[in-house]
Length: 265
Image 1 (cartoon, helix red, strand yellow):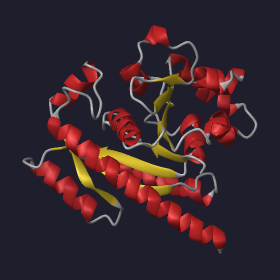
Image 2: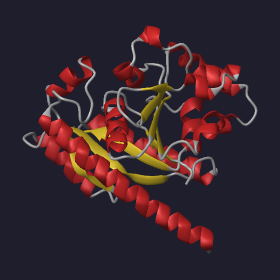
Image 3: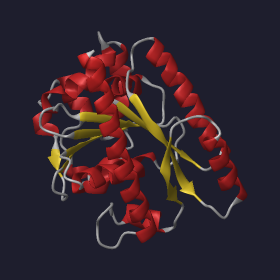
Image 4: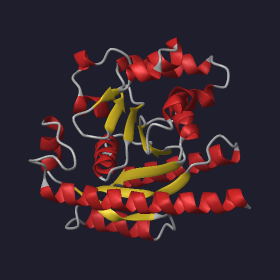
């Protein structure tokens, strides 16, 4: 079966998007889904969890702009079943390059297409933007996860992103199934946290049952390059990401079943 392609996207920075991406990718790999993490963000946070800068020779920019063979760009990680299509600061130039390309919305899909039979799932970590790279990655995606932190700005950013996504759907640029909105950096003991959770529940949006808690251990995990399943992770964060991964698997399977029914019709 051709790989599922999950875009993790948010318009606001600082909501834990890359942290969600790397832990989801690790969780899927540990659940025996052969996974490729595609880092589309020039900040290269997802890439840096697994590789120092000097270990990356080629990146997504080289695949799309210079037609470097994508199989030469993909790097295996220390986790069985998890590879990375890395990013570097050079990817910041990709948005400008895409603007002048014919069929630019298809370029990310074309970049990963040779790999689709090699993996069960691709996880795209997208920059917090509405640029051409994001549009192209969303066009390539079959499903979508939207993280938001427990703040007013985070909630508004998620709502704006989803409204923008509907415009892309109407334009037939994006067809990805919305798996759900994921609440991150959640503190049940704060009023604002409870208010944002309540507003999300009243929004009518599909929400994940799991909340990612706000913990100081998250920063330690990032600094020590730890992900779901590693020794020494924060137990609360590890448990939450494990539950979230299981929810994603369930929702992906449900979406695939619906697509199968529609295609037979």
